[in-house]
Amino acid sequence: MKTNDHEAHDRDARFDAAMRQLHATAVDRVSGRTRLQLQQRHRSATTATPARRHFGWRPVAASFAAVLALMVGVQLWNAPEPSPAAPATAAPATAVAASTPDDIDAVLDENPDLYLWLASNDAYALAME
Image (tube, rainbow, N blue to C red):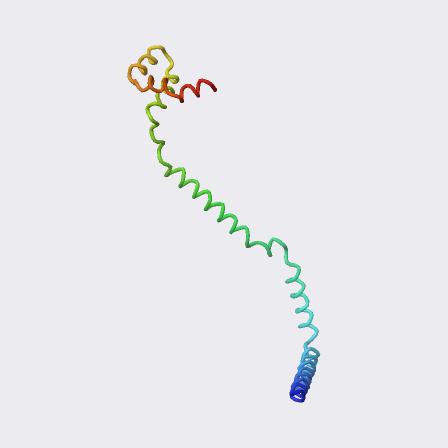
């Protein structure tokens, strides 16, 4: 077994040496003008501006912001109308919103639930605040 491993290693080493020699010969045959062009292209590729290298995140960020804005707009557009509050809680706000004594009297006459609300624990807790 060891002789087979040793022979395989020798074959790999000979092949590697032959490929290195072939590469060295090919490099020697490249003209000076071609080498200069390759060096310039390599230098320009490695010194690219940061804005050019990192351009990909800006469209993604802008798209994400647009989608979020669209989602908020759709949520606000389709927001359900506020459901009418229970008459017991709506009456005091209506009574306070009235500006003249005639309006207050009209609200008190129209909504008898106000008196029930005044007798409830909610009115007492609100008065204690």
